[in-house]
Length: 247
Ligand code: GLP
Image (cartoon, rainbow, N blue to C red; front, side):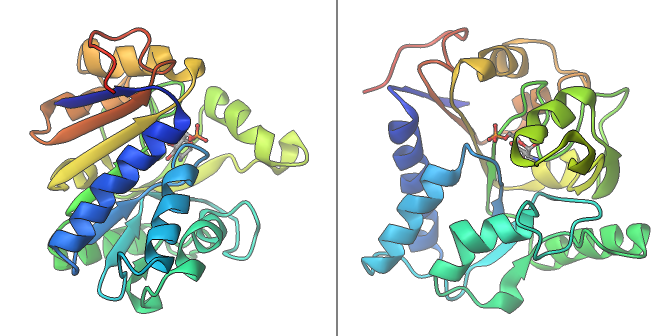
């Protein structure tokens, strides 16, 4: 595993944007796995700017998002589709047909999940998967549990996650209790993975995930088995793991 412990959120964001930029330049047809949350916002800002500066094009890029709230329509301001449009998709030259985000309003969950996994497979798997991490060690919405789940599936969100998500909603009752997420199988099938984390509330999750045992109780710990993972954290999120600060 490559590890970057960087000064702050801004350095973390620009390092992540550098890796995505290289991926796009090396392979303009790349399949990217995208994440939402406050952590990758800065990275998306850099990518939009680099597109505006003419450095990168998303014309032939294909994307698959990790997850979506169950029950939220795509035009709900807290839906992950809305987040992606707002932070990246509407600002770059991506072909809307190449954008994939689980449908939070699907009537047929098993069918939608099966199709989503099939589309990822048909696209030749994800070249570069971007991940954040939950304070309980979740990736996408793969919550701590008894076992790892391979494919896209519906999950009941844990109290920790509901709590963390409540900051985006007007009242607790509005926080969706369920979500659809890619499974850890599709995440592990990605050819390379970057995981970003910032702030001291992520320090324990980073330590458990990368220096603890591999267990479904800490879903991100399975990344220890992947041959090409790059961890990019700021000093606070990296404060409990071994390693020198990178300049
Ligand atoms: C949600 C998302 C995850 C994300 C996590 C952390 O649970 N499903 O993909 O990594 O939040 O979010 P934040 O970056 O806002 O801390």
